[in-house]
Length: 221
Image (cartoon, rainbow, N blue to C red; front, side, top):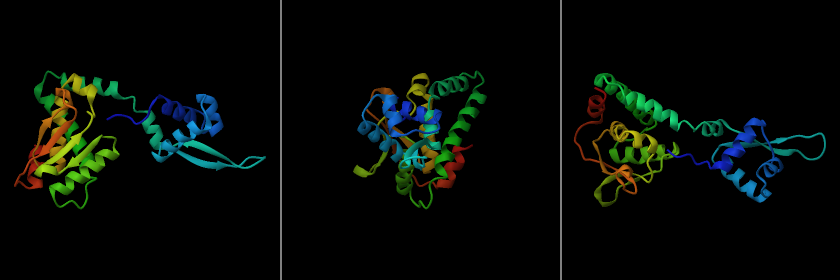
């Protein structure tokens, strides 16, 4: 999952957080750019919900517009967890006891599945679940889309959400496939993977007569 922030965005958020807020002029001085350039970045960050503005009264003159980092912005600032994720995954995958290793990976898989499954409401068909799942994953930062063309049900990721983990152990790819399978309540197979040199990861949702409940039950056994 790639962060939408670049180095300048992070510099703005870090400055606003450390300074408990700031105005356009302060950011111009920090970045050494024009007010127009700062406003463009501020507008984008505000639209993404990472900063919020408020009018602050002054003893003289008009109130000034002050920008502060939101909880979402603080979350994005903490997105430097990738190396920690790799270390944790290596620790799990490195267990010599196969039963313990399988149990731990299964818990990770079930937690991820539950995270998305509880967001899907009012979905009576696999197609509806597919479309809503794609939207939920997009809102979580995945570059993903659903595709029903050609009579197939496809989830297409234009970039790998776990590139560092996939480089360490391809088992993470299987975990993602199993998560999608649990959430959708239907078998899911790979059509292509970024890890294999393809331009995107594609998951095909297969036709099935099994009920959602029975598949979810078997996946958690």
